[in-house]
Length: 183
Image (cartoon, rainbow, N blue to C red; front, side, top):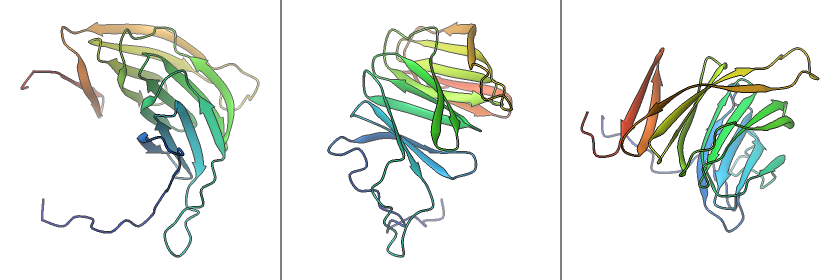
């Protein structure tokens, strides 16, 4: 880089997950909701943009979604949130404003902890795990009918011989980094 880096925080979120560490974070597409996953096995949804003049955001959580294990991966796309945890489970959350409209367990559970979750065009969910698998799911949601169910179906899987460390979507391409590979 050019040697310029942040040396002072603009916003401080103290004790957002109590005494537990926050492990992942993302903002909603319109940057109105901060979503964090933590070692306390919860996703917290917090109104964003509520910082005062000192840069401190009030320690109020608008919604809390419990998991069975620490949440270590989170992603959002439009009004969907996906989160993966250390027990290999992935949940998909449909939001209306900051309230949870639907909470769905993704059909295939990973055998080890989920390292990455991502959305492609708000209709494909990608999950990757230390078990060496990458799963892709079709997502169907009617954004105009609040009573319509959120539908998730498995589409395809990639089976790799080592743990997946991370994924990256660039345009329409999915890049997967597998442990102990240099390319």
